[in-house]
Length: 132
Image (spheres, rainbow, N blue to C red):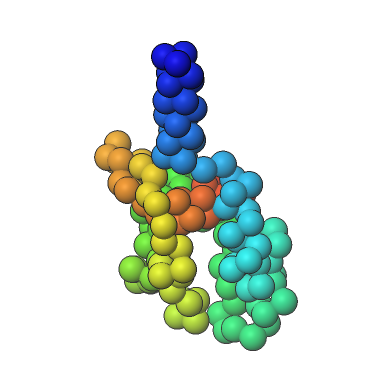
């Protein structure tokens, strides 16, 4: 009985750890395909089927590094609609309300772990993975 209880607790701990860990890019890719590809294209280069409807066109999400640095804070702020300062267009919808759920800790570059809804973190990791 003790062995069964120990095994069950171990499985629960493993499941909790997997849910609390950072998502892999493939998890974010699915969210991207469902929400972003229509404008930003399947490859993230701003060439989706709706891209021609916007002036300026959607951003090339494969080229978001500035001086070789990918700003997680900036990308998260744009996706969730918190900050779009300096963006050429304001046509991008706010996805913050769509990307809610359990949170995972995300290092946004300053060493401080920020609780972030898992779908938003997954999308961030995917976009980071497609940088040139």
